[in-house]
Image (cartoon, rainbow, N blue to C red; front, side):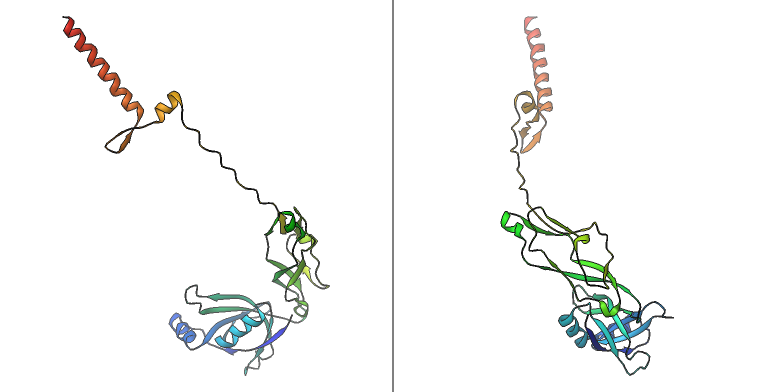
Length: 240
């Protein structure tokens, strides 16, 4: 992995309003922490320099500090997290992990899929389950990415973590049974047309409409029974 120099300046603890003004002046508040450190260190990064670094090298580079502070100058760190405002896209905060020489680190690396699976010509599609993998290694052995050749994958093939080869000194710590990518057939859903209601069930399901509003068939049947009863009463009166 490449080592990239970056200017850092120590800063004091700030309030919310002070941080907002600090960012408006072209700075990014950062925090450095790590194993063996007595306390976290508040840092300041320059927005333009950090943005160029991210755009060119990504987030997996080893950062080597340049600072007028003798304790910070020459220190190395990895980017743990970058927080940005989802609306304004302004950098809010950067978390950095200090690197100690000779100590292994666990870091997530991006996966690069190389080639086109043979299974695509067989009617399959690519289904990516994972785009990053966690690895453990020394800072000097950290690769920029994990490249995987998928050109030999046929239809219904599945590539698992256990199938991936990495360089000496690098160990993948994700579960070996995890699926990373597969080539499969997409099944089309067949919709069954609705069957119209028939007979008595259809009559019960139908709604009598009056004034644009649906009424249950049972209500109509009840009214019909009532009219029949009234008609019977009238017939008895006529006979008398």
